[in-house]
Each structure stands twice: as structure tokens, then as C-alpha cells.
Length: 193
Ligand SMILES: CC(C)(COP(=O)(O)OP(=O)(O)OC[C@H]1O[C@@H](n2cnc3c(N)ncnc32)[C@H](O)[C@@H]1O)[C@@H](O)C(=O)NCCC(=O)NCCS
Ligand SMILES: Nc1ncnc2c1ncn2[C@@H]1O[C@H](COP(=O)(O)OP(=O)(O)OP(=O)(O)O)[C@@H](O)[C@H]1O
Image (cartoon, rainbow, N blue to C red):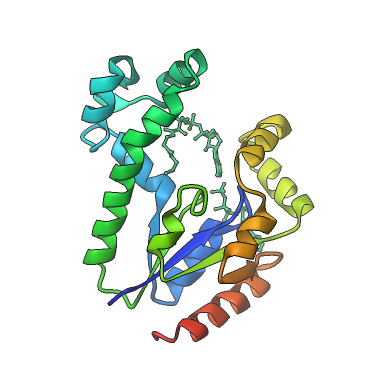
């Protein structure tokens, strides 16, 4: 049986970088954001059910995120309806991946692991952690969002201290060395390799 490790942490705290370190050590990796992009793309499993409820959200056979944003701006309750359609599809995608991978350990990179209650499906959970200053520097250095947008996304997520307190393992992403050391410690504890 594949051991399921849920990996989470606030925006820009190093989930993807840490997930790659697990992959380099033989783990299979599944990424929730990537799964949503796949489900929304033309031919993806979210297109028909979202289109049935929100016909305006479909453009060129795919789910349009700007269109969804406009719907949510007009009616904030739409978000929970969208989530009630999308989350079960994400959960199916994840379950299929867990069944099909032959890897001893599968890592599930899920930004909203605790917020969505997905942690209960995991055998263990890990949270990445770095100082707020470093987090802000790294996110803003990407140049993809303003400080206000960053703060707004952070405000929607559980505080990272809370995520780390709930997680079985904490991975310090202050440097690549500290993260690699903690990743190896997690794998040693899991004991599947
Ligand atoms: C409402 C939607 C359409 C808005 O999409 P959109 O990409 O425009 O906004 P979103 O809030 O997702 O992100 C805004 C910007 O911030 C970035 N961002 C948002 N959250 C994060 C995060 N945790 N880490 C990094 N970047 C983030 C996005 O890349 C984007 O550039 C979208 O969030 C959605 O479809 N949500 C329902 C599905 C869902 O719950 N997904 C979560 C994973 S299960
Ligand atoms: N251990 C580390 N040491 C040094 N830099 C790191 C480390 N981990 C991540 N970074 C840097 O921090 C930035 C954010 O990392 P990454 O993309 O892995 O975070 P994330 O949590 O997946 O982000 P998001 O929440 O936006 O998906 C990147 O520029 C990355 O190179």
C-alpha cells in the first residue's frame, strides 16, 4: 500500500520546491493546483458540470477563470457552489492517482489541505515553514502579484502557525539545505524506502 503524505503551507512557503525534493527521492507527487487546471482545460471533467450550472463560465470548451471571477464578484455565494462542484472532482482525481501509482510514498501538494478537510485522507501531513519576511520577499520577487494581492490570498488561508501545529512534520524552507535535511528526516520516519 502506498503511504499518503499531505504537503501544505501558506502561499510561497516552498511547497513545490519541497515536493520536487520528495520526487528526487523516489516519491510520486500529485499537485492540487495542477489538477484543477487539468479539470478546467478543454476536455477536462469540470467543464460539463460547471457549464451546466454556469453556462457563461465556458469559453472555447474550457472553464474560464476570469469568467468565474466575474461570477463570484457579482454573487459571492457562487464560490461555494463552484467549490461544491470542483472539490469532489479533485478528490476523485487524487484517489485515482493514489490507487494507480506504484510508488511506496505519494506526496499530495495541497495548499488548502486543512481548510478542505483533505488531511483526514492522508496517512501523515507535513507543513513547510519560513519566516513571514522571507515568504513576502520570495512571493513578491516572482513579480506576479502586488503586495495587496499577496496579503489578500494569505488572509484567506489558515495562519501557517496553525497549519504547522496541526501537521505531523514541519519542513523548514529557510534554505535548500534545511529543507533537504527535513525531507530526509520525514522519509526516515515514514520508513518505506
Ligand atoms: C475562483 C477561481 C476561479 C479564481 O481563480 P483565479 O486563478 O483567478 O484566482 P485564485 O484565487 O485561484 O488565484 C489568484 C492569483 O493568486 C494566485 N494564488 C492563489 N492562491 C494561491 C496560492 N495558494 N499559492 C500561490 N498562488 C496562489 C493564483 O495563481 C492567481 O494568480 C479559482 O480559485 C477556482 O476555480 N476555485 C474553485 C476551485 C478550488 O477550490 N480550487 C482550490 C484547489 S482544490
Ligand atoms: N528551501 C528553499 N530554499 C530557498 N529558496 C526556496 C526554498 N523553497 C522555496 N524557495 C523559493 O521560494 C519561492 C517559492 O517557492 P515554491 O514555488 O516552491 O512555493 P509554493 O509554496 O509552492 O508556492 P505557491 O503557494 O505559490 O504554489 C521560489 O522562488 C523558490 O525558489
